[in-house]
Structures are given as C-alpha cells and as structure tokens.
Amino acid sequence: MIAETVCSAVSAAGLGVAAVTAYRKRFLAAARIAAYALVPLGLVMTGVVGWLADTALSPTAWAGFGVLGVAWALFATTRAVERRRGGTRAERKAARAAGRDAVAPAASAPSLGPATRPAAPPASAPRSSTSGDDFSDIEAILKKHGI
Image (tube, rainbow, N blue to C red; front, side):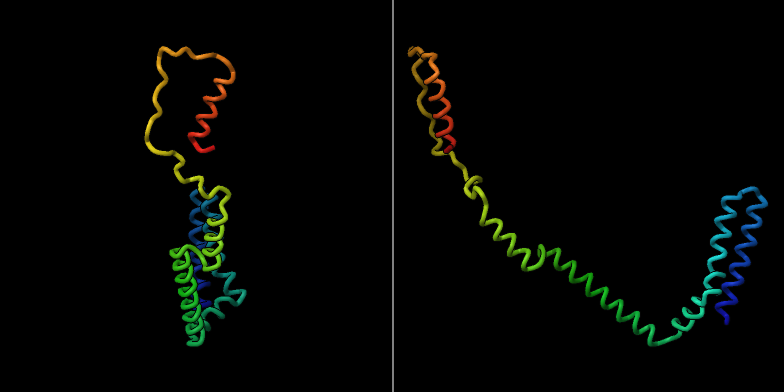
C-alpha cells in the first residue's frame, strides 16, 4: 500500500514539473517529463509495484537472486578461462589437425642452400642473345629457390 502511494505521489510531482516546463514554452521537454512521470502510475495500475513489494520482502526471492548471481559468476568464469586457454579441447584438437594437414608444410622452411656465391662469368666472354640463354637464367633462378 505504501509503495502505491509513493508511486502515485512521484507521478503527480512529475506531472506538475511537466506543466511548469510547458508553461515556459519548452514543450518537447515537458512531453518527455510527462512520459517519465506516467511510468510509475502505469506500474501501480498494472500491479507490478505490488508484486515487486512482495518480492522485495520475500527471503525465498532473495535466495533465488543469489542463486542466479552464482550461476552468472560461474558462467563468466568459465568463459574467461576458456578464452585464456584458446577454446575448448575439441577446438584445440581441430586446430592441431589443421596445422598438420597443411598444403605445403615445408613452404615456410628456408630453401636457400649454403651462403656461397657462384663465380661471376668472365667479362671478356661475350653473351649470346639467344632465347635459350634467357631460359637458362630463369631455370637457374628457379633451381636456386627450389622450384
């Protein structure tokens, strides 16, 4: 009974503030204040306030809120641990299997041989400009890179 009275008084006060705001020609703000002021009155008329008042004084309801809080804490903790580990066991196993089944597993291995340079051709030897010579250069480059 007291909760309904308080909500009705808050609604009346809010509507009074809305009327003063409308008198000052601030109609948009007055309409917004009136909307907020009517919410407690609507809650009283629908019976929500009575239900909340009964729930607030019920030890069973508070125990239920406690159980919900514990459930939420457990959920949040398990999610945090799962993120730190990098997913569930099945997800880690699938990631390892995907790593083993790579298309070119040796692609990241260096393909260069020893760090010796081949001797430069003598400057006096003339180069022929045939197409076979061009392809031999390309073949040498490809062999150097292991392709």
